[in-house]
Amino acid sequence: YWGQLPPHLFSQWSYDLVARTMEHLPYPMHALLNGGCRLEMHRPLEATELQIEARLEEIDESPSRVRIHQIVETGPVGASPALTAHMYFVLPRSSTEPGDRERSRPRVREDAHEIERWSLSEDAGWNYAKLTGDFNPIHWCRPAARAAGFDHTILHGFSTMARAMEGLNTTWFGGRTPIEVFDVRFTRPLALPADVGLYVTGASGPDDDDPAPVEVAVGDGSGEPAYMIGECQWDGSIASEL
Image (cartoon, rainbow, N blue to C red; front, side):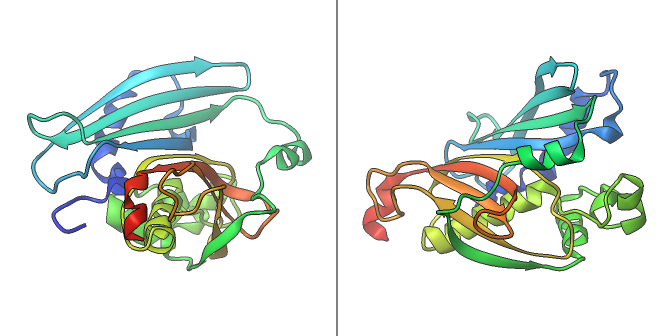
């Protein structure tokens, strides 16, 4: 990323503005869950003075949950946005039985191909907090995580997403950064420490000059419950270089 900013670290400069857009909402903010994110990379994000705009796009309420849609646009001052981030937060209102909830969670596809394996230490949440400024204690303080209903600290959803993007760039795309859209959902907490894999499924490979979207998942193994699922759309013009 010489002269550029990694797009998947957008939360580092976005959270303050996002929090301000939700100050007036009548919900317990401490109970919000990170439901997912869609990153749209319009062009490389230059490492220069940035203009950042955040807006509360939509609130969708149902008897079971509240879903909040935020949009953050980032680009050089005076220019059109280079990066658009759609952030989705969920506030559960009612819960299903644990068995029903477990059966309904997405799984890594049986035909998925593992391209990386990650060994995540118990400090992974603390390290990501120092990198981004997201110091929610459920990610690095076990008593706080237990108070929130988790047996262990859990990895930030955006850390899982960032690791997946880096894994695609370095392993699947041979060191290039051709991803144009990365759209993911966080489907279950990733408790630390952990040993998990990054999986891809799709008809086309990175050497196809007419690429189809690649399905992406993070999980313990093929057929196992997924911590994150999503889709990667990429620029096929790099195929001749691979």
